[in-house]
Structures are given as C-alpha cells and as structure tokens.
Length: 127
Image 1 (tube, rainbow, N blue to C red):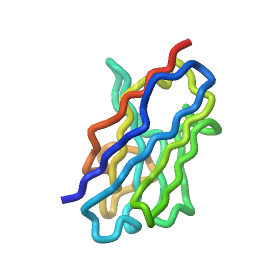
Image 2 (tube, rainbow, N blue to C red; image 1 turned 120 degrees about the vertical axis):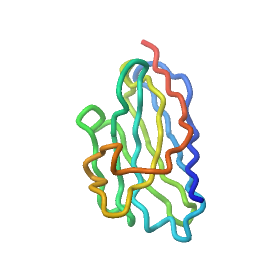
Image 3 (cartoon, rainbow, N blue to C red; image 1 turned 90 degrees about the vertical axis):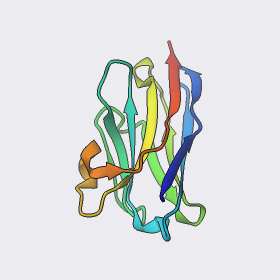
Image 4 (tube, helix red, strand yellow; image 1 turned 45 degrees about the vertical axis):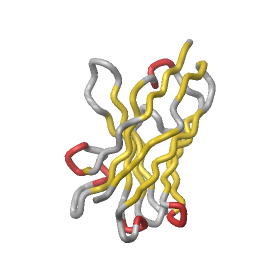
C-alpha cells in the first residue's frame, strides 16, 4: 500500500517562502514514480501546479506558479519537495502530493492521471 504524506505547510506573509515535503512509502522503488503537487482553495477545484519525472530531470509547472515554485526530489530519502517563494494571498490552499498513474499523462497535471493522494498540508498567505 503506497502512502504519501505531506508536511511543511503553515502561515506566512505575502512575499515569504515555505518548503513543502512529500514523503513516499510503500513503493519498492519510489524513484520509479512521477510525483505531482496539487492545491485546492475553498470553493475551487483542485489545481495541478507542479510535477517531476522519476529521475528529476523533467519538471512541469502551472502558469500560476511558474518562476516562483520549484519542485525537486531526493529519491534516496523518498521525498519530493516544493519550494515556494514570493508567496501571494492567492496561493492560500490545501496542498497535496500524489503519484503518477502508470501510462498516464502526468505532465498534464490533471487529477485523473494521479493516485494515492496524501492528506494535505495547509498553506495560508496573508497580505
């Protein structure tokens, strides 16, 4: 049973930074799974914001976070990170990580191409 657990959320002022972590367990080889980060604000649909290939060589971002957020991974630690800089109030949301489905178009950042969602970590950005 694969599990993904997010951490690192919190409250920060606009312009600040946070680093989220997603620890993956249960896979025999975590390095074989693409990982994506998603977020969901109250009253809005879940939005895919970043994804990373198995080896970390390819990354994809939504326009809303491009240039401010960086996704990375350390397969030796079974962990994927999301460094968030220049945070804005509109970044306030619950943030989730998930594993890419076999054969899915994980780079499209669509929910349907991911599974094994974590429980989420809350990020609140005040103005």
